[in-house]
Length: 153
Image (tube, rainbow, N blue to C red):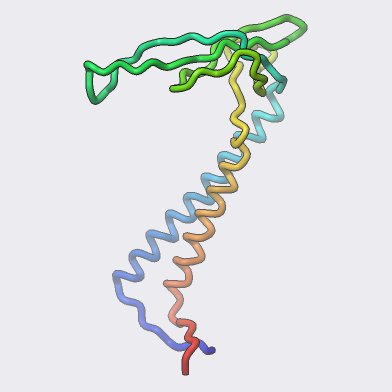
């Protein structure tokens, strides 16, 4: 096992440079998303809410105007500033079960207009971005190095 000199072609250098830039963008995006999540955690109240109802609507498909798709939004009740507060969540392709408990973040000054359901996997997004960006950086730098690892003699 040893290292041998290697001359990179222009195409290798170009693709590695693009990969390096994309990797650094992913890492920067991971920090950005992590900071947004941390800011929300520090400035917004977090509580549990209960799905009390569901609203449905029919949307026309953007590809086929004759096809209609039904979507559902949960109506969620939670306690904000000592009062029972209700808001409508985002429309999804599935209906949430009545009685389901969800985590809510909201601004105590405007609980109805700022309330949103917290995705349980939200904290994994920055780590996924760090991982993908890190892999891209490692492979790109490995390609840009003027040496290659060789296991044979």
